[in-house]
Length: 215
Image (cartoon, rainbow, N blue to C red; front, side, top):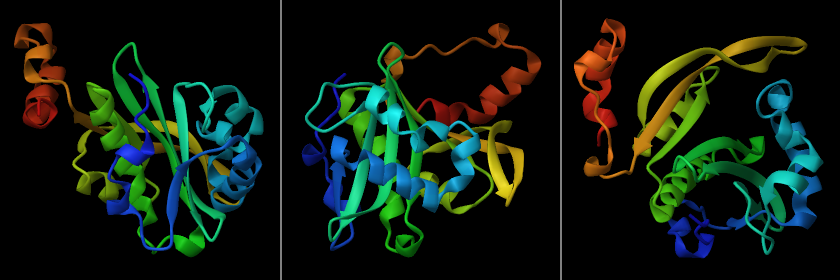
């Protein structure tokens, strides 16, 4: 389950004119960290804190032209300047792919660059033969929810207090997240539990979601 080359995917369909997506290079790490700190400081206290740590990229991220790792980061540039970043993470043992983080420079948030996040999660999962791709989306804002829904991901749950973020200057709170998923595994490779295998509460939820989950 190797990462598909960005050049083999239809990236042009989600890249506005004048912009270019590429895999993160080692010499761009410090610029990415600096930009994320400026663009989205709220994540510094939660699960995304590694993305404002240079050593995280050096240890865990699959960098352009270097050996593969399970986390890959893409940046988008305009006139040579980084204006967005997207990170996804694979788990080859479970054949799943997770959207980790997507951040766009405030001055470019009306450009359409945010569509790249759900796009690359979807297309990498499909190209790599993954069974499932999923993403947790903060309920602080509605825009990201709309993006992943338009990309064909299904809401499969809401996780209360699943991350920590700065919600106001100097105020840190546990924030809820929506859990979105998309299934790629063929039906004959999926296990569908009998009702007897589930509690009443799980059974109700399963039947509520079943048609979407099994697609």
